[in-house]
Length: 393
Image (tube, rainbow, N blue to C red; front, side, top):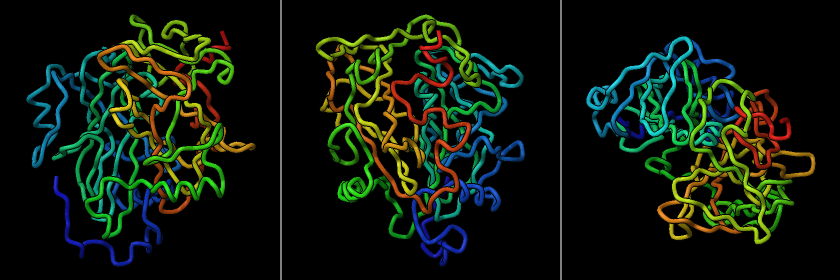
């Protein structure tokens, strides 16, 4: 993997193709990247269903390897060479695909390939549906020393590391577990790893048109999110806990499963508290209701580890338009939570994460909620799209 650093390689007039603003590229610019050969596909084409307002879904290829451990290739090394060292089984994903067992680690080549110019970098996240199933998924590229990051100027294949933690899952060629977004950089952003908007700017945006409802917001390196454990506010259960021994979840089937076969609902308590047990996986919701404006994108970010013995499984990328409603901010953030080594008590309103916002390099032609694949618009405490609504059974 090589990252070209010669400033002369940057387009003298990048707006000629991508506009005059720098930041996350919207859907129409991702299509432009495909037409310019910056994004390719082993099967010849990018599907419309992969296109989100400001991100691209990535698809599994024709095979997957079970490996004995997670790894990073390291500078100058290829992922294929590391797979040859760590692989134990090669499994076909053609036809009905294969079941990936929980607790095991797999690596799969993706159908998409990249040939980025020096002015564009990329970053990946698990799709929201993937995170809500506790499937640990990360992007790997040749020469990388960090997961989920693609340096500007990268040319080569993409791979996904996959490790189901709570449920066995069925995947096949074309299954979409993670997504990628692209950043158009200027010469001042070379080497940056943090592109989040400052709190001062977020406060100005909130005052102009609220980013959040459900209380006065707190901005601290992003929008601080607090957990909701109030049954009245959520209309019943305050969370879900994954069962230990369940059937297989087919990653490509929507609305096919009964939540009762996979999840235990958590009733509200009078004291509005919940004890997180080590090794358990929980779906919770934020107290705040959010909206992502048309010119911004956002993602969950870790809080200070000194604030608690738990972690949020930071899945998902919040596309522009998420949470837009006729009465203002309308969608809660769904939180995928695990405790660390000891039981840990949390209570209603406790800080549990933060949302980092980033500017787009132009508004997208389509906002989240305007397409048939917007499964979580206006969500409350919601399981992944694979499950029927609890009210339906």
